Length: 63
Length: 466
Image (cartoon, rainbow over all chains, first blue to last red; front, side):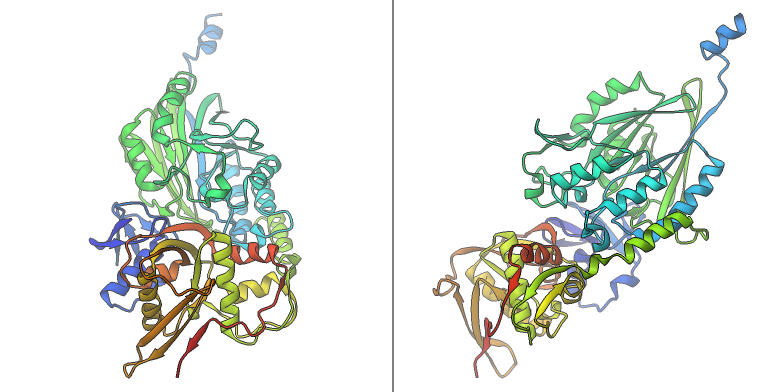
């Protein structure tokens, strides 16, 4: 499925969690990031947990 | 006489208030229950008639609950002790299979609701599409709804859902709204659908007064009203509850609001619930013997063979792969293998992901794992050997299948790997993959049930040529 991390399109397996999407995103950007330290938000500004579920076209943002 | 008549017809009705405490995705985090129960005691002293609702995924995530001698019963007993009124089915409620779910519901002092499930006629799972609750003379219709994925099923292993059909929440809601709107003063959706979907439902169904949501582990900290529908969700694992208030006058909702309350920050524990949790945690669950090790494991390669055999067997795949970093023990002694040792071997609880890959894609995956994880992946269903070139890259990779034939680069194979590998290995593959929604350590434990005597003496499947 395709989801968006910081507006960058990420193709990932169906059923992926927020954590899996961020691992793939940061692998692609080359940044070394402690995922547990991130503030992750959905498209509405709500905080979401790393083990939260994603669905097709979900948009998440990190701070 | 006139006054009596007026009272009877409700013409002198005062404002009435309904208070709901909702939470979701507890995932058996029993250690937060004593404070949660203490908080509920405190809230009930102020709001004695409050409703307590769970938006699903009560289990999965803590072996003390999930592998208890009577699986999931710790959560059932804790929810009973805390006075839950209703729960919706979450996708993880199915993780122990349908018989286990039926048993959990039977032992619960509260009901389960789900309107978009269609159970076979002989199913023992006792679930209703909705329940009508009454608080202070206010009739409240609570409809249940569970998330479904693109395959038309909730996110659980398909074998756990065999014989059950699901519809989308949006498809089934109109009929229940029609049925309940006239009977009830308040209409709620108790949803395990994910926040994004719950916003969509709110935009379609303004007849709902509130959606108490779950599944996406979203912390809805600011009051969210979409199309007049209040939407809540309190992250996960008993970190928060949401307190929602509904004020009614003459049968109409005149005000609604919600507040998120932290459970860990609440200082007072319920002593009885603390005693229950201490008892579960000191239980011999972790000491239970799950298999017998015939000859000791003395290296990670043989342990990796065991782990990949387990995921391949459980997922009925052609091949299984495991990154070397995911094997967390160097050895295992001969003799009884306990649950604790299995979790020490594989503490990550990563879900297993299935792919259909060509032989060429598999070769690229192995190369990529060497580059990314700093080691060659452990495997099941094949053996392989390779050389390293002057840049420390894999060369001369030769993969042989279990039947003794070489890997066909053009053929397609079903392979499984953990979600860490599926996320970080950057190799081209046509199939995006599909989570099995089962963790690697669950698969290992299930495998050991079918293979109680394990012997990996001299088993090695990966060879570096010199």
